[in-house]
Image 1 (tube, chains in turn red, blue):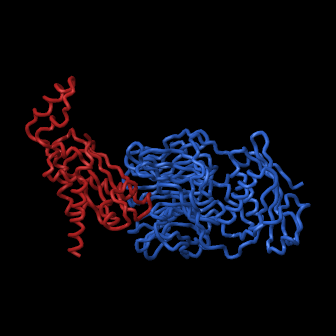
Image 2 (cartoon, one colour; image 1 turned 90 degrees about the vertical axis):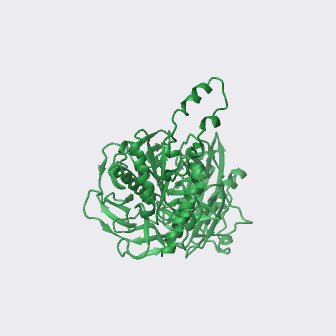
Length: 178
Length: 422
């Protein structure tokens, strides 16, 4: 049983890592010199963009790929909507970040595997997202920073009829507004 | 005389978007009815091309029902009763004979059709069916309905329509089509999911869930004008619309007060009233034919199961027990049974249960089979299935004997629902 849990966790972690660059391109741009990348030196735009970024010396921890905040998904067992022990530090870190950055907003998007009706899964995904929202609020985030929605089984990350796909699809994504 | 003109019986739907006719590739039929009625359909006289098209629709409809054995009419081609020599047909073993003529005039087609009883040598029904010339299929469906009705005693559903969602990559389309999957018309196309289409009782409107604004919102759209209204757009998810049989109120599911709960609302979105208070997931409400009860899915007992409650409030009763979980209940048109998707050991089975006995009957062998709905005559059940790695539409007769798979040209067919009689 323990082995099973560990392997599920590993799968989840791998899935989370693998999909990170695609999900949150902000993380890629986190290098200390972000302006050079996005400055194809258009005559009129260059002066406006250049001074803006370097002013802040310390990097927003949200953009640090080594930070726990780089994890933007939590995963669930089948038909469960409670945040699992191993994912609680992730949610708590986001709660702390949000409490310290009251200008940031995040959308919590609940998703499910395909075992269930589409409507039941819409409800389950909403329950997952709402659960994360509640935990974020308890951790200091304010309600107006948060919006929870559900996609049910309508937006699967993996499409196979097997646990390898299902385990990736049972999740809540924390999607920060840019 | 028996002959009646049924003008305007067919082809009422005017959808603005382009039609994608002939998008169905193949239809597979598995199994056969217990007693197949031998019947011969003689290609109609008159315009040969039109007659051929009508013949294909009529024979296709009858064949797919699994209730008929089509006896080859080759060699004989009577078009009016006077030309029929009954002994010729008796020796072929056919019990009923369909004959007729077609004529095109002024953009309309009229088919004069008769169904003859070979054994009794009498006319069972005779009608003239007309429609505009781009609705040949509708004429065929109407004739097939008349034959079905006369020979089985049940009303035919070949002229009814279905709605479903087609998913192709990230593109979602809400489709309305003939019951055989042909004559597809796009009601809504977008890059966000669409779920849970629901027909108004008169077939004039579809309610559905769309994610186009970033979360689940329920809309009601006219199939005549394509105009639509927002039925519910509260925080969280708005979903699972269902119409009462009189069309005066709707049930739907909102998460605005917490978990998914069932509410009643008027079709214009006013007068929202919460009717379940479980704190669990209560979803997929469906009105009984008399409008008094709602079936719904709930996990209040620990796993998703089917429950029934009076619309006006009162005690809720759990209807499904035993191993596995159950989803998507819908009443049969006679109100005696309900159909649902039964999930057990990772497979879904289309299943019916009689209210009186509580006896479950698995109608399919199991697989990715979801979202069943009865045809308005209660004889067939439409559901979402899978074939060749794609989502497809499928039907099973309510006795489980005849199955049919409809392969659309591309993409995954999902969330089908059978419409009412036209």
